[in-house]
Amino acid sequence: MDKQLAVVTGASSGFGLLISLEFAKKGFYVIATMRDIKKRFMLIEEAERYGIRDDIEVFPLDVTSKDSIDQWKDFINSKGRIDVLLNNAGFAGAGFAEEVSLEEYRQQFETNFFGVIGVTQAILPMMRKQGRGKIINMSSISGRVGFPGLSPYVSSKYALEGWSESLRLELKPFGIDVVLIEPGSYQTSIWTSGKQITDKSLHKDSPYYKVMTKLEQYIEKGSASFGNPSDVSRFVASIAVKEGTSLRYPIGKGVKSSILLKTILPWSWLEKFILKKLMK
Image (spheres, rainbow, N blue to C red):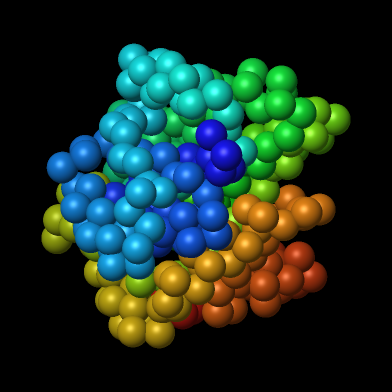
């Protein structure tokens, strides 16, 4: 294959779909993976509209299934190369810690964290032999700043951040870069179909019902100001071809300032500010 090859997980919608298109526009041959390939039609339609349909191939991949990862690994090995891996598959689990079951936490981590590890481990031998490659992990501002009612999602992204730090140090000597993209709030399906909220916090007899309702209203009220996800897709595509990357790339309205404030302000100040905003 003459073209560089990029793999995208979770490519049926949102960032995954848009980044697959941008990678193809940048000259990559893209393996766009998704758990349910019946959802491929929007991606194919958009690829045809941009004249890049021949540069995108869809392949089924459930990042929580070892058998699925093994089949995908064999498929990638048959291609003979992999230049960029974008770990994007994920969902946003919400609920208050007292009411979120261990099974719900495990499901969140299976996709957002262990799924990333499984897919990455599958391609590392090939990247090492090549002596080059780039692994881009889609994290979130939630991997740097915690938020009440989102502990499943937040904790999975914190885990991804720490793992990626270690992985970058381990792989740098082999010519492989590891990068974290940390978006703020964008208009993607993670806040609609991708969001999973435990039923307990939505019951009126829950001690967290009022706060969860306010959280829902806060997210809904702010959704109009969420950023354009195309900005993120273009940025990620530029990182894919960039030489000399950094580990972290925060992007989005208020993201850098939130991280800075957490770094320089006493926790007690941040705590009062967040709780006042949500509880008023």
